[in-house]
Image 1 (cartoon, helix red, strand yellow):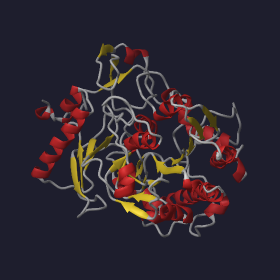
Image 2 (cartoon, rainbow, N blue to C red):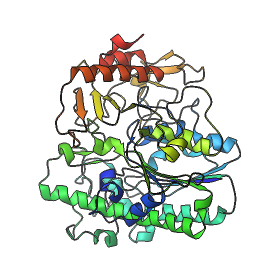
Image 3 (cartoon, rainbow, N blue to C red):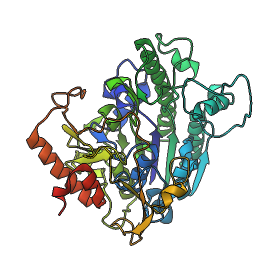
Image 4 (cartoon, helix red, strand yellow):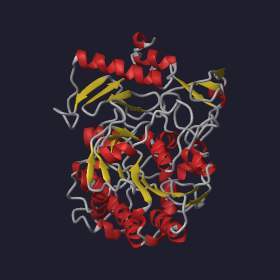
Length: 491
């Protein structure tokens, strides 16, 4: 048995033809939908990039207990479970966050891994001083200057990190397709910003300007004129078309080698992106509207051979780990797993849950049943109390400061930490951008674009109870109920 995951970062379902975006040139995503099961009700869990990957690898929500951080010593990650049971696992990626402080324990769970350099602000090529590289750019983030340096080493399409990543992934398949018992994860940072695509993909969109003056919007409210907003959307579409082209190479090879007979295929993402909708850019601008939270998902199971089918069951990234493990005849031990295997959902659209939680540490806790989305915000302006629980005290690109660590105490264990006590460290919501954490309720049936939150005390009370029950199942820390004003639901 063999399995392949093709994972994109920041893949917006509303820009994919199988989900209705007929103007976007992405024929291979349409081909993928015809060859697999397409999920119409897939949602994120923990946000953003690395928290989503912790969900995906462990089958457990990250965001209720900590912010962005590595796999913990007690975490069960499905690539390592496969490895420990004799199933070879390989990661090929250009996702630089795996090599930073906050993601440093993910790639080493695989038997082997390959890292392609140069995406976004990857601290790759050194340049101390150069008049052609400005110290300040249109994006205030210091990553922008490093990105301009990195681009000098990716002028031809074959030099782009995405192109190299897929080339390495295809090479693994060609060398190993006759072998049995392996898992391959081809993971590209694209179509994450900056939205830079080779010119042949930009030419697919006649309206895109010749210059590349606006391909990296700053996280926050849209202040640009409509023409700039439209340019960003076209630049994103061009980069998505590049993703589509390289996805097609995987599908071509599966055809050529007849891998559909014995190879599980999953194509997914971590989250979507606001491209000017709701007056905002990016994916950690709150609240998490469906442009961010409602994600695409495609799966092929060679045992059921279901293709060209749609599934409406509510699923999440936490379901990936138990699904892949069950395909190989394995499962996660213990009862602290929030995800469920989707193998019967793939075959019969059998539901695995009635409600799903999603959110980001220190922001809303959101719940949906597929129709209603309830976003519960903090009841105190201070957004306190809030703590991180960890044995790996790192943020995205740095360690916890000495000042932060002075607040630490040992507590626990939690039901998921295998008897291990954890550091409890005072937390803030510093990572939140331009946030609106007001409590809101949306009915997607009458308001699919989430333009107007409304009040319905009965529905809100019911969803509060469902939320508290799911938090209890996740062994959420008691201060989360206090922060959200849900203490009446705590047993």
